Amino acid sequence: MAATAILMTGTAAGVAQAVPAPSASVSSASVKVDDRYTIDLHSNVRGAPKLKSRVYGTAGRGAYIDIDCWTRGQDVSSGGQHTNVWYQGGVWMGKPMNRHLGPGVWVWGGNVDTKGDPQKGIPHC
Image (tube, rainbow, N blue to C red; front, side, top):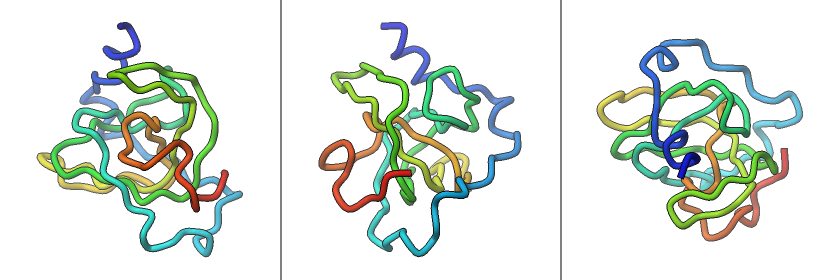
């Protein structure tokens, strides 16, 4: 599938670039401590909730997202998952990068280990 190749391929150039500021509509008071979810290995972290947006990095082992909010973006089918839900927040990239991106970056819901899309209790952006 073309979507799979796009989701699974990161670029080294995208990793070193600046990360956007968080959405003005999201307050830190709306984020709960337990809004941390693991991200599938090789998932791209993006600048917007669509496949053609800038890739800031690709998740490694142990990657997770501290979710601030969710929105409906590009509808994607990949790896047996199908959703148009995207999560925004700060991402720990895992090994080997061992660095943080965001807040304000996006991960497709099919790559975030939630119990459903959107995950209950997480505010809409």
